[in-house]
Image 1 (cartoon, rainbow, N blue to C red):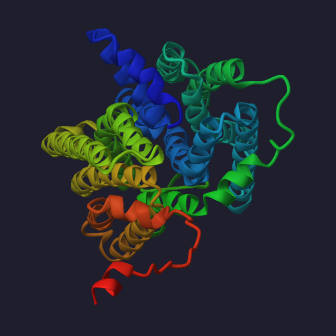
Image 2: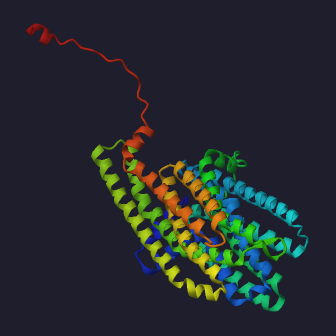
Length: 470
């Protein structure tokens, strides 16, 4: 995430308890802010409001989150990488243009999806059209904003925006439901989204807007996707791999609690909740990768760029090795701990969420699959750091294919097992491929960035000494 490391390093350098806590929350917001907000809101609403009284609201929240991640999540890595390029090349005048063009894509793609969705399902009720259209479009915009807010290097406003926006969504939903019913409850949720988007827009414009923008800004989003096509493919397939089992469950159960919204509540809700158990891992690896790891990573490549001695380069590589493996062990340990905690607490969670035995199975397999997904995202990010886009791209193809095939065969008896197996195998594949490159990184980088030395003829000198002695 372009720019986040500067703010995190500044916070962590204070060596205080509160700065560490704030840096953790900052990482959580920029890595999974909309994710946390949607999941927590869904859980709390499920506990406070009877499900049968808000069928449209519950369905729309899940649809909003799933399709907003697919619409923009698929290209988020391409945009992030292009943004990092602009910062590295100091082409700051293009950053706001890239942001505006990315917003244009978010709005256009959301509108296209919504139009097709409403036409296919013949939804004509204005309240439903307005509320669902607004939440999907705004959440997609927030996904865009989360990428660019890291480049502003502001901290407190980001945390407060998500905090107050989430609370506004939560309390607005519960409060308005008591007085006006389901539609106004959904409106309260949208107020929270509007607050977050408005605040992030305020800070992005304040810190990134330039009076005389570059003339080549209108198509920067398309340029980013064109330049980093493999990242876009892997992003799309990663999110499709994460949700394809839900789509299969929808097609099998064909249960609709609100017109147009096919739903599988005993599958969707536990799978949705299972992702909460990887938020700490996402936060942790963003926090580590953007601070200590990036410092050592940059030092290693600078030693190569500056033509340092081989001994110096090897020392830099050794330091990078230690940091990378220590970070990997830490993340694996934390993710395993949260996965185990989730499995232990799955029973009480299932009772609180009114899940039956099928839903409990889905929750348990979902927790395991989400843990594997979190590790997969970590390995993919590492691979992107070393400019190895083929690894996450092929790994995402594997995850999607396995989840699709297994879910088609097992969705009735073993809900979520395709999701778990798909990402477990994808993790094994991606880590194996990455280690094969990383263990011989010096040789790999030499071959990839081979110097263009001029060709010269070999000059043969006569050895007159030996001729005389003969």
